Image 1 (tube, rainbow, N blue to C red):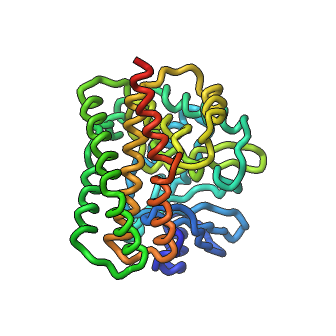
Image 2 (image 1 turned 135 degrees about the vertical axis):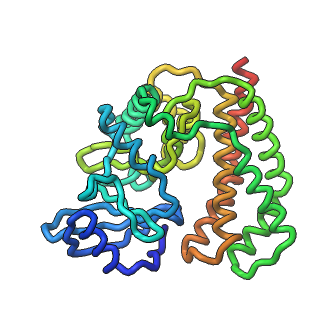
Length: 338
């Protein structure tokens, strides 16, 4: 989130001391990320050591247990959380969970230009993650892909809402008008995604461990070129295309070009892409983002400066050559690959 939550710093500092034995000299809120349920801070201890602190609502244990497992399997591009005094991976803090990490100085994929080496490293790291043998006891706890209509139904609900409601917030008004102006395009997007989902639900697929949110903000690179994949908030057992859809998918500008894709796959290795699965995921990601931004603007007045950003990001998907256009191009590859 971009605005600091209404949580006194003194309470956070006290909890860190109780749960981690950490004497905090300074706590600094960091306005990072689009997730309204997660606030992040830099905590500096009395001895000068810096820590990266997350306060997270809607916490899922898998966001901690999966990275810990991958680290134990030798996937070095993972930052493991620091354990509490009771050897837990997180601590309770009212409606939040506290997760503490070492603070690693670096830049994300939006803040720097990734080199070819970085893109190959990402490819190789994802290949290791996709091929790791997950033990049955962990595998049972990780959700499996179902090609659920959840996000499509939410977007339909927002379409109905803007036709029957009025809004006072300026960004909500702008979004409602935009949704109405794109009614037919949104309907076509949902319909095609449903068609693909129905086809895929009738088929069997090899499921691998997926991160599910491989965009530039979730890549961290240090000044010494150490490379990390961060924010394991929604791991999923799914077809490999669930992660691969980001490479060339237009979610951001980090690895959007054909050359970016080619360099990434030099690291990932040879792979057969199922373009029906890839197209589904690219469409579905657009729909998920539309639902998330609409929820942020139409169901609450909270968010401050996050709200204008949410409106801009919603509109971005519809611009020529962006996410919807790229998903449609991927869709056309289904016939070409037959």
